[in-house]
Image (cartoon, rainbow, N blue to C red; front, top):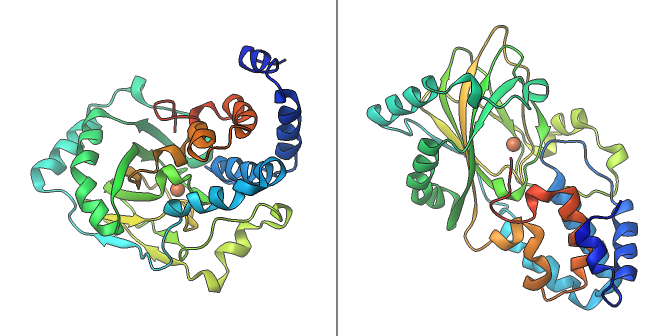
Length: 295
Ligand SMILES: [Fe+2]
């Protein structure tokens, strides 16, 4: 059944033709199975759709995303003692005061963790961290979302690559009772969605050309990595272990209209793209514009 938004637009000249082309384009783009892969589907579908209906704008569109492509030379940065003693205590108090009701449960099966998004105090800390993280990342950044992650004995983090909204992630360890390394590949291009049936996480994790490096994050330490350009994973947490981590996400300053697709048609002056974005809006409403994210 068509939404009111689509029904209304179908009266516009050429819209039906564009809508059908958009549907056909989307049908041809495989959806990766790894966590947080929706952006790549949206970007690849847009690329193919523009090649079909506005090939004259394709290069401009592709080049427009350059700011979201992590420089090859970027290296994982380790930060010891991220917070001073009093801030660290305040962080722990904030965690202790979190109620059962505040705990989000939608990642218990996939990650073995409870999460809490955008806690007001952690959002304040994220703003304070912005200059430091921009300096470490080597470019001016804006704050994305943050979330507290309470891993229990079922904790794990399968191989994946993040949405560019999390182009840079500061992974801060509040507390843990185990040594639980996180593994990062070197910076790579965004994965090609053409051969997904051959995609094999084990093969990627064992690929020596990807130069995976491992980091154990001690309490009050953090690592900064580029989640949208580095494959990353953790093995299942050691027996009966637990870890309380806080993830602060950042993206490049000025890239807000790129990480969310809602402004792509106007930003790239491709009104035809609206037909595809209308479908994205139904399928991925949280990624249309800032303020709607549920990540
Ligand atoms: Fe990630």
